[in-house]
Image: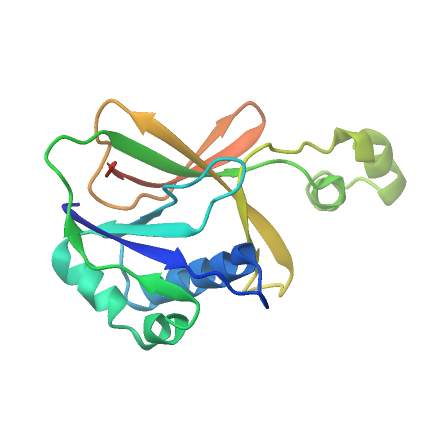
Length: 191
């Protein structure tokens, strides 16, 4: 991935930046899926306790141009400023962007236990009390599930790496400390 562009959320007294970021991310995700893109990654250069107001796209020149020319991106220009595409400087670090999923819903875990293990509702409640919920201290985006229509939090972990893992966006699931991690992308860090 040799290029990047920043999309900066514009201040708006009627809508919080996080709400715009949620919508922007969800729509960009749909654009990437529609275009069958696994060569464009997303990072959040201002991420700290929240994801900030800048969403950065990484990729090669043609794929980035294709994404930015999509009708949705043009509509979002009322809420966000799309920067020009820039070449990544030669001396950069690397960034791994991962989705982390906590086993935070005792209700969901109980339903699964009832289905898979044949437990009754009372047995499942006894085995998995509400106190078993785990929460993450990571920034997140709130998305709408396309299958259930429910809102859910997509927790994002970004970590600097010493080398690049891949030039392509990956979808690899791993388990660590009771949390499911899905590697979303690995690419050069830009200043």
